[in-house]
Structures are given as C-alpha cells and as structure tokens.
Image (tube, rainbow, N blue to C red; front, top):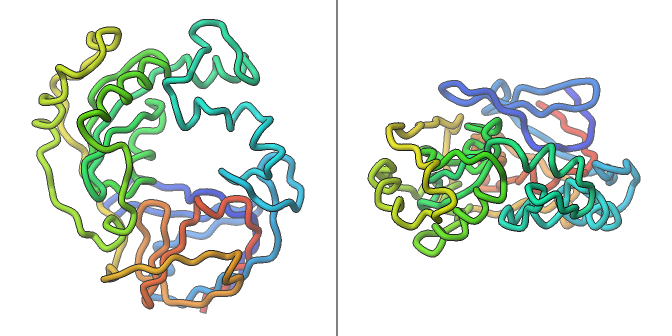
Length: 264
C-alpha cells in the first residue's frame, strides 16, 4: 500500500487505546492498523501549510515568510499571556485573534514525563493532552479568554515545569501522580483575575496509547538528514511514531514535508 501527501499533525480519536490517523488531501491512514508492519517514509519536497510553495519549512509547518506574517503564527500562540484581543488591540489580524483568543480556555496539569502546566482552548480537550503524550491530565481553571489562561500559566510555572521531556515520555519512564492533590496545592498561586474560575470537583482523565514496545533509548528521525527511512512500527504516543529499532519520528515536527509512505 502506498500513500502520498503533506504531513500534518496526526488526527486522534479517544478510545482505549487512542486511535491515530494520518490525513492527506485525498486519503487517510489509520496507523493503529499498521502496528507491527514495516513502514517506509520517503521525503519528496516541502509544501508550506499556508502558501503551499516548495520552500524550506521554518517553524510550525510554515516557510519563514509565512511564519512571520500570518496571524496563526503570532507570538501569542506559544505565549498566551501576550494575547491582546480582549483589549481590542491587534497583533497581525484582530478579527482572527478575536475568534481564537476570545473563547473558553483551559489551564491544565498533564503528566507525560513529569507534571507540567499548560494552556489550550476548551475545544482542544483532550486532544492537546494526547498530542503531548500525557497518560493522565486534569483541568485547573476554565477562563473566558486566552490572556487569563496565559497569566495563570505564567504564575503556576513558577512552581512546576511547563515543558515535557520527550525522551522520558517515549521510553515510558513515567510515574503516576495524584493530580487532584496537585490541583488543590496550586490553587493559592492562581492570579486574582482568574481565581474565580478555579475548577473544584473534577477528576483526572487517563489516556492509553497504542504502544506494543517502548524503546530503552530513542534516536530521532530527521528527514532533512535521512530522507528515506524504513522500520517496523511498534507504537504511537503523543505526535510520535515509535519504531522497532528505537527510532522515533515526530510527525507534528515535520508538518509541511511532503512524503511517500509505503506499507509492507
């Protein structure tokens, strides 16, 4: 079987285990169905997710020009505390920024390699947790805009990490934590503006990933350096494919790369 298309982050469906899909323009592949089979990945060219041109990908699937111009790549994406739509203040496109920033956002705790704090739109729960490879997560606050979520995250990351150790996550070097206790312990550090939005009575969500075999050590596949790769798929976690030879491939980190995928 052969597939061809531009890589975008894998689409997911909640289940036990989670279902993963590579979605191309005219086709899709359920990756759970090809576990234990050999995949061949061949890099063909670039295709910027915005302009569609064959230009080297800079960040987030975009060429350098688009990354610095389009509203969906503004600094407030990675740093939500920089959001200004609630002030009617434009960054790159106020209409777009209002649409994204002025909607309910969640500040959460997720445990993938360690406990981390994060921000996502309410509509992206639990997708965001799946993409980070978290085996457990819990909401802390639900606020009406991205700015309030951002300042809450900034305050809480003074007391715990906001980063995932992807190597630990992929080797499954993780421990279960009581996230309800963590949520309650962090409550006093929530900024005054967001304190009324604290969520008191929820329980943690547990997630199961389709992994047959975890590697002891990982080596990352970079299509710029290794444009053609072949290996037996042993698992999917976060946005990574895990292969039998301990190679891992970050699909989201390779957005905008056009590839051919063969299945033996």
